[in-house]
Length: 384
Image (cartoon, rainbow, N blue to C red; front, side, top):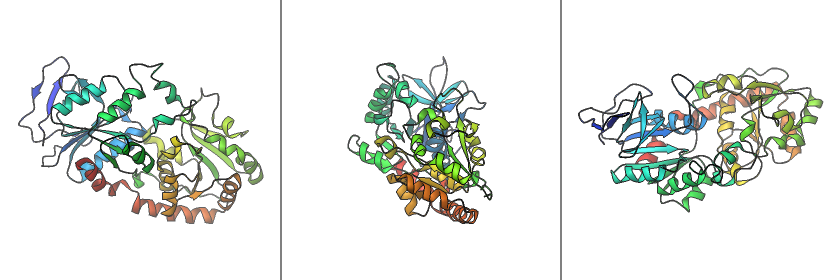
């Protein structure tokens, strides 16, 4: 196990030799052992919260994998980055940082200094990995991340430096088969670990006589997806007399969910944090996963469907490859054409159909897609 190096701002590096391990920021435990020490490091955290709370990407691809590795005996930590040129990019802790992990897994690190700092750590004998669960090469211009990561408008912090860092990593972890295929042709070592959920975080919704249809997400990050609903949903809402709820409404978006879907009236609840997702999902009873057919969406995982199913919400999804995988396991309905969407929605008006489907799907998610079973897959990914 690599020796940790503790550093405080303005101090010189001090050897942490003699400690039995690095303190986990998640559990406070010190875990000795022969397995490699692992740090999951990302800036995708809500730092206005106290303590900071992981956002969705960091939560599902770093915090939960960290917990899974801890569960099978790894010394694993997750948190925010803090760079220092002689040591690389460490994990922020209090007013200092922890360095010297055997393996560091980074996410969404796009600063121009990152490739150099990766090389610094590799020269010290540490393994550097990058986790990828979005396809930045094919973001729609409407997606707010397209402008935010544009090399021309943000020359020091963009998706070009991100890609250079990916190519410099010792290995890459990805969440979907599409990403595995794409980066398998570009990187030396790509390891696929699909997403999972903590089923017990979600309380199953009670299915009423008349359902509310809903979508969870932020409209600023979409790529022509919600517009697909406009081909059938407005007429269906009028005919069936059902409501529609958007969980994740952003008030300053002029092209909010109702506008994109062509609806006259939509119930809304505001954008929340990862800890509020279960409550946000309690507002509707049938989930919608419309995805425009493009490479960006083919690269997306089936995570939204897993969240719906864990919350006892039957759902209809565009048949991307990931949702075909989920469907083959018995979770979700697939719809390509407006008629298919409407036919599924009509079937789901029956409360007994919804209740039976919700119960069956939640069992499948717990048995096949729960994070409790991901310790060994993540251990295999980390150790190679």
